[in-house]
Image (cartoon, rainbow, N blue to C red; front, side, top):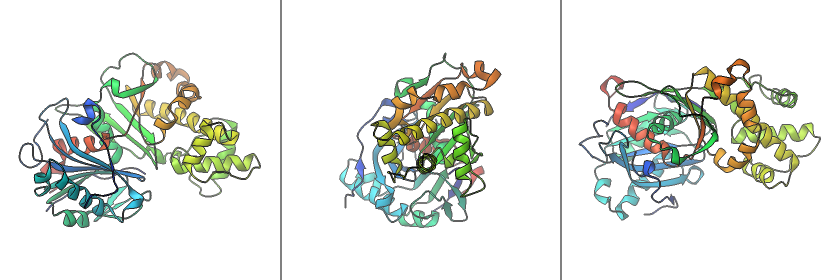
Length: 372
């Protein structure tokens, strides 16, 4: 699910999974910092399955503007709401070298899919409703800023090193220009980093809601089945965790077989382990559709580079490379030559959303023109 309108809203250890120090970009990610220079604040990246929360501060380094001081990943289904997770994270700080900062947190930047409606972040993929005022009151902070989740990841790609990515489509080093970031997870997110001065800007999109465009006879048959449930079938209805399961059930029906698997993870495992030819065909269709869609978006936004993110692709990296992804990506007629100049790389989500939300907040989130 897509765009969150950027919003600013003024005034014991848990079962969360600890994550250690990571790469150079993620261990640190130019402008004034939140509050006083170097004043720590919270940054959170909220997905449909996991929430990633960090205590961060500004480094004063344009290449790596954010330092992640403490970081945890939470399973959303284990918690009653986002406020409870954030309170738990703050409570954990009492057991770290950053205990003093816990008593003086004033601001929080949240990256989340969905859209803001009055006091709520509306997103059908979340396990619970999100009340902006409830979070602000629960933490006793003066400002909560909200940014789209893929907008935050796109913002963070400015600080990526090539060594922190994996190649999907090889191409010469790109010239300056738009950078597309997209990927399937609980939903299908997409955003575009636009170069500019004094700093880059990010266009958050709802590209995942574009109508699904089949490219093979088999995909046409699948679309016919999916249209029985709703008249508008989007790319997100196929290119996401729930979408993968829809593809599997539709293909099982076309094969006249009863579905054997009930979760996206089971379908993926059965495909990768060669235990189910239907599941393997589904994953091939998934990768082909993805290649076609990525190529379309690359042309739409005039992308000079493309990053693939989301929770699914790192698990199927080798399968993706051997699939029809590249064939479908390049299958754009006279624009094939253009796409051959556009590198496609895979990034692990990790702390990217937290770093992106924090970096954006330092650059834009406290700007008076965008709200109090």
